[in-house]
Length: 323
Image 1 (cartoon, one colour):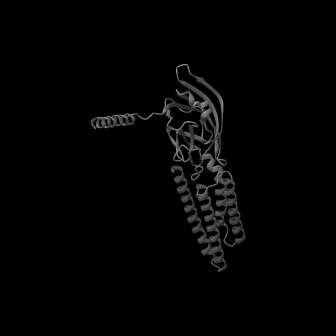
Image 2 (image 1 turned 90 degrees about the vertical axis):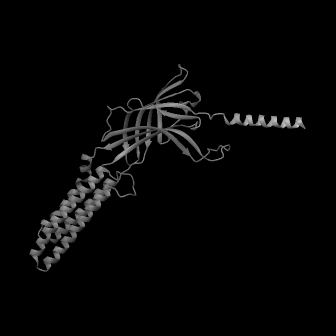
């Protein structure tokens, strides 16, 4: 009996020691990949197709040869990309890889304040074979990240931010050994902030609309009994504004939100309708032989509508510029 008790006690001690050893094993840390970028060119920004082209140098430093970024580099938000140049240096026990990439990127544009819009160009990098448990990115933040000598036609670059994080995929990619369909991959992210130089573009787009309003506005200075002329000018200006809006909309992506373009055109259409309404009232006064009252009404409406129209345009344009 003593021997049995001794053997059981010894078994308990060995089992406890084994469990403690297993619990004390530290978790395996993922390998790090130091990555940096230098953008040399951004061009062919296409608002209608929601895309742009970018050229840049990308470099990576790591130790695990299995990562093989020449084959496993993935740019999730790129429509396509080509590698025009690459070099690999493994002389110091690690991998130092440099490559030149040309990418056609897809992005979503915020056109609510167009043409006074600010956009963010995003580029994401991942390794298609190794998740965040095996590999994580570390950003190389030394130096500039884009060439300050290249100019983005019609735009001003006002920020460039590098960051790292994880991208979650709610799937196991067919791996039945994974219980929960959830995987995370380390992601290296570049967000480039650009602001449109909109002064000339604004007048190029909206000058026709403002001239159409002024044509309708001149109806107040035509004698009240010139009914045909006043109505003809107003209706012609109405169709001119509608045509101007369709031309601008054809150059922009579809949007379900109410944009500055919609606001200014809608405002102009409303005020032209107000001109037509005022003309109809003047005509009624003329038919009642109230010529003086009709002329006085025209002058009052001319000043009121002009002041309101200019003030509302300034308000909405300033709000878009500060938005």
